[in-house]
Image (cartoon, rainbow, N blue to C red):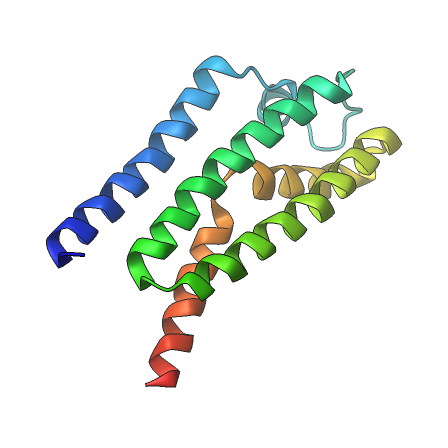
Length: 143
């Protein structure tokens, strides 16, 4: 693939992540976002519909995952990177989703900060910020 095309597509990928972020705020009302912005972290959580929240989190996670894996592929042009990233994202999704909904069910104000950060990992492309430099340094070390 031509270098200029790859760089352009990587930039489009990063802008796509930004667009997903802004569209999620506009179209996917998140009661937890409102809660964490307005209430004290030590307050009791509002009543949240489990399945609606799960679908919203899943939509955001998988949108970010698809774009992030595309960026990783374009950056490294290595199918092994994509395979590892796919496994990593799926395992992370399962662990984070279970943790998130266990904490929602417990609904203890002492765990709200943990819930806040788990939610962040689910709805933001934070793993790309970890995987991109990790793969870069691994590739650099191999050379």
